[in-house]
Image (cartoon, rainbow, N blue to C red; front, side):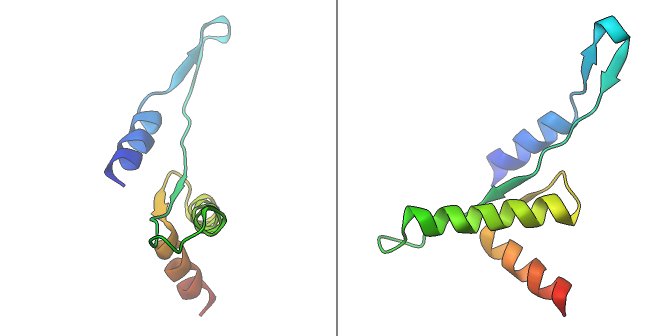
Length: 80
């Protein structure tokens, strides 16, 4: 998670310039992560968890790193 957070911060803190337009554009990124649940965990299940985390991160506030289990907790909290 620390690596993903460093990547997110690096993108957020480094606007890129469009010299021909004399313009600087700030961008952000949202990252969804998951952790393997062991030998019985399938790649498809891990992908679903990370995709769900990305969906929550993007729709929550953007510019966020979130782990699959955190995404589930946020979605539950948001719906109650």
